[in-house]
Structures are given as C-alpha cells and as structure tokens.
Length: 68
Image (cartoon, rainbow, N blue to C red; front, side):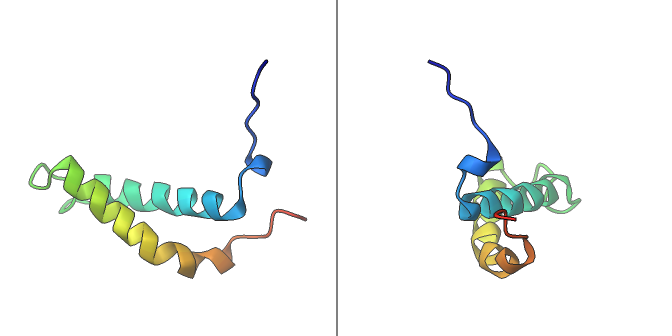
C-alpha cells in the first residue's frame, strides 16, 4: 500500500503555519546577527517557532482559500 501526500490533504492551518515557519526560519538562519555562531541552533529554532506562533494568526487572512 502506498501513501500519497498532497497539499490538498493538509488542513489549511497546518499549511499556513508551515509556510510562515519556512520564511521565518530562513530569516533566522541567514540574518547577519541571528545566523552567526553566537546563537546556538536550539536558540534560533525556539526563536523561529515563537515568531511563527506570533505571526501565523496575523498572516492567515493573506493566504488564499484553497477551496477555489
């Protein structure tokens, strides 16, 4: 039995949180002050998750409804 994954199977909230986390995580990994070795990987990950938790509800209305 093969399992096929598609974006239509994901709830919209999970898709939005993942999209915001990808953008915030990329910013935290490449920003000069935050992507340096002065901050540990765990600290950057926790900070990216916290910013994602704060931004995901704000960004949710900007994503189109996938039912169209």
